[in-house]
Amino acid sequence: MTMRKLVEALLVALALCALPACEFLTQLEKNGGQLAQGVKPLLPKVTYQDATLVQAPSRPMMAAYFCPQVVPDPFGVPGVAALACRQAFGPPPSPQQMAVAFDLRFVVDNPNHFPIPVAEMLTAATVFPAHTNTALGAACVVFCGANQPGCTGHPGPNSCRASSHDIHSVQDFQNAAVNFLISSGIHALAGQKPSFVMPQVVSDGHIQLTARFSFGPDALLTTLREVAKQAIQQLKVGQQVQFEIPYRLQGTVWFDVGSLGRVAVGFGPADGKWLIPVASLAP
Image (cartoon, rainbow, N blue to C red; front, side, top):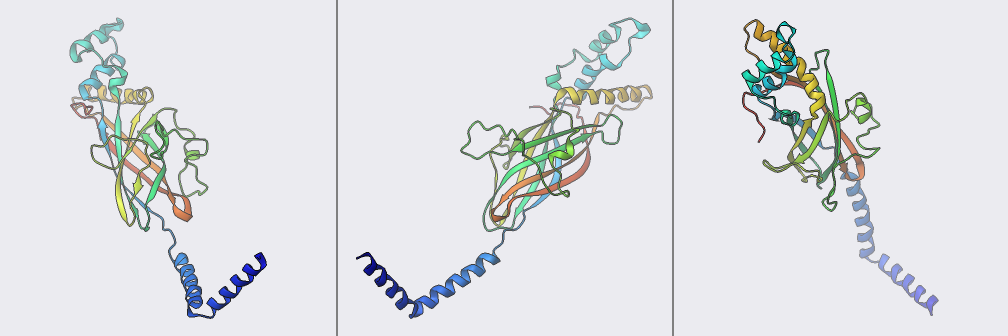
């Protein structure tokens, strides 16, 4: 009975191939193969726009914090400079109040007919790159799926690594200070709180992404102390004190692009200066 059904099925198949339907199916398969070959995934484009200071101590806070550290005691009497600084600028703020944070803005263009997720981001920041007191920090972020509650973006041992020498990877920043640069996440809408949920770049379109980072207070304050020393020299010659943080930023963004798999697109280096404002930017 089983053999009979098999023979009948073969006869039906042969009959179909004698009809135009079989030719149609064969041509459809051929065209489908050509179509699949023609629709190859394309690399997304990442355009770095700017780095904006979003949190910083005010200049009066800088003066109150660093004055007791950089102003010498008159006549070598301990505590005199600290007392004078407190009378002039008020009590020094806590290290937590001296936090500095910035936003990196990118435009990501997706030329594909399907959305692509942002998988990982590596960012390296060098402050005072032209000085001897250069400080380097690097942060690797792994973005999480929407079905991963509690995900922190903490990287694994193979995160932010690339085989190409043309792309920056975490191996290139092995000398970065630990906890010097800290990621708060990424967001695509103005006013949205940064998170580590994986953003999607829409098909045949673009999206503006903003990544927020902050500096760990210990390493940055050590560097800013040198700026405060320079401010003392400015005061001595009658110049207006300016607290500036020169920086250099660079990094890599990884995407999951269909059959191309995990691809990396670099950005930077980009140089600039953050000017510490009179009033604190912190909310």
